[in-house]
Image 1 (cartoon, each protein chain N blue to C red):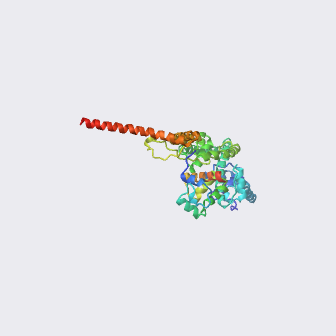
Image 2: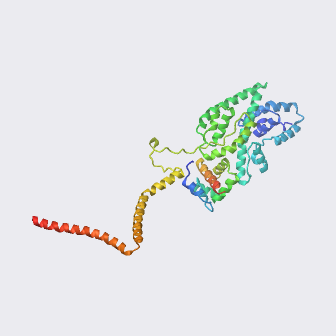
Image 3: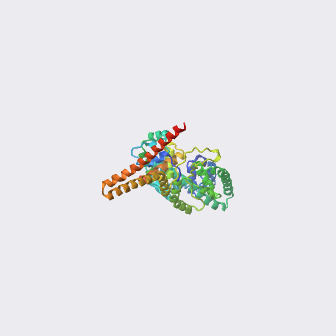
Length: 90
Length: 325
């Protein structure tokens, strides 16, 4: 099992509800602000994008990079976080 | 009269490409300089035009028609959503809904696929051309071949670092000549990647079948940080390591161990209680209170007698002591 951060575990532990986008693993203040500017102000909006891309890892990573400039680690953390959340609740 | 026959140098690269294709001329690799296209254009097309000068207009019409029929559709942004989806499907990639936010991504994906497939096409065509009578084309191909080899040497070193993005194109050049296939199978640390690998493999197989000369393109190599070894390389044991997964049996054992000390106390208490109960049971069985009282008195008498003995001993001692003085 790869190591997951506390943020990841907190996010995957319960339905995301109205959590802000910064609650996602890999998305901190800077990236969160950039996403909010683009209109992705809540975690569920990013989830929407993730699902529209059919949970494809490569496309989602590219989208994250283009939208908020996330690096490889941040992309991976966010993708993993959303994927685990979907496995648990979707 | 020379309006229709423009100097090839004035045409754009895409126009030169489409012209070459229209006249069934082998295209050089995607990133060749314009000079290469211009030369080929001059060799084949201008000779043709000089011969059939009167049918210039027809040629123009044909060129335009050929451009539209050029099946690879080099400009993904000019496609409609449905066409984009169809083009992606042609290259073996099943795309999801193409909406505003996803369109850019799918266009990029199509461009990547076009480049990798374009190279695959060209490799096959190059080999066919090598056996043609034209000496100049052979020389050009050799030059291009040597360029690719130089790129290979660089990319062998660079791809060892296994980075995303730029390495994709470099990986493709390695993959083209199928020299070092082991690089394609770099281990992927992320488990998510492992899961995603499975649905992608059938896609890559179809591409392999379509273009037997090339391997499928790697989506990118992702490296995650390896968990540091405890106490290795002078690293102090300060890291908070995640709790290792514990089996239910060990959990039960730990719980039992926690209770062992209190268990002894519980047993002791239990014994005391049983003694008391037995004592009471005995009393009750006699069915007379007086006997219980007698029992109690006997106990007290015993203790009293013990005290009395002690007192006597003390009084005897005292006179003895006083006697000694």
